[in-house]
Length: 307
Image (cartoon, rainbow, N blue to C red; front, side, top):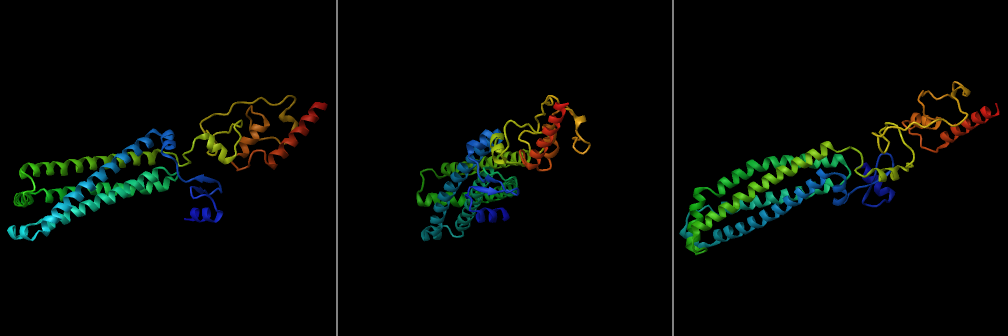
């Protein structure tokens, strides 16, 4: 919340966020940039798109089934011919299932948007909420299907179909309805579980830093490309070792006082040792402290040359 307040106070773009260090970062990544960053993230988005298509298809089928069942329950002549029919309860059950798929659709879209953000906390929160709903979907859909496709409801629906002449063969029509109700539910449940599994693995294995490539990371922090940093969490490539740089001609550590001599005993030059020692302290390159150190080193070199 504080990051959002800082963003609006600073008048920044709504697609960028201010981090704790005061640097602005893009709040959203395009699906193509996310695919370039991680194959798992791109695969997760593809599965999420398939889940969205399945949820929309299930909602359309359930809406059609609810409309047909509800129209039968409102037919007074049919109700008189079939007293005690559970058509109204069956229509309510189908409507509740359609609302459940609508909630799943909203959560899936929210999860896809969270995957395109640079915030790991937001992604983990969306994944956990989606996982709870996906787990509860399996027993809930099993209970709804066991009621909607029970033998009692089968008898009432076939009788209503024959009385209204809805189909020439009502038994075959019921078998097709039963298959059309079970197959999408099983497929949607499997896709929901797969989408949750992929998203959970991606959120737990991705880095807590920004998802941008190293070049953009360097541009954000204004880091020169020719400077190589030690194994430090702020470096653009922490796994890249430092290349040894020979000291300048005529330079020796013995010419420095004890206070000026760097504590490092490596073969790097004084500049690299200064960078390695002070980078973790947050000292920016080419800052006043580094310039002061360079002037002090030049004075030492001039003194050694006069000798």
